[in-house]
Length: 83
Image 1 (cartoon, rainbow, N blue to C red):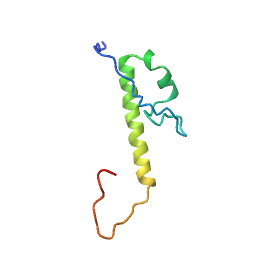
Image 2: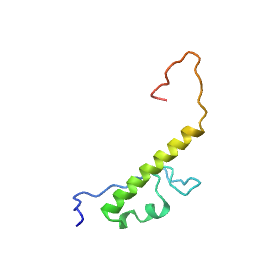
Image 3: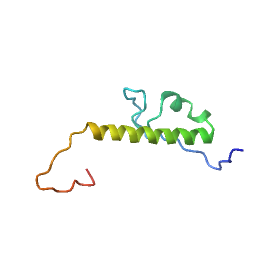
């Protein structure tokens, strides 16, 4: 039995509506079908899509860290947390 949702699950859209080379939105990481059919999905499906978007974002950030060359600081200073 599915739990009732008392509030609508808001769309994860942040207004950056362009796609990357894999077809995911650069703003919310949803696929085309997930964006266009958001209102037709059940709350459970919407939560699952948000979970998938988080996974996609983490994977993309991890890949960017691997591809980003590490710069050595000769003084051993800690990187800023706000860059």
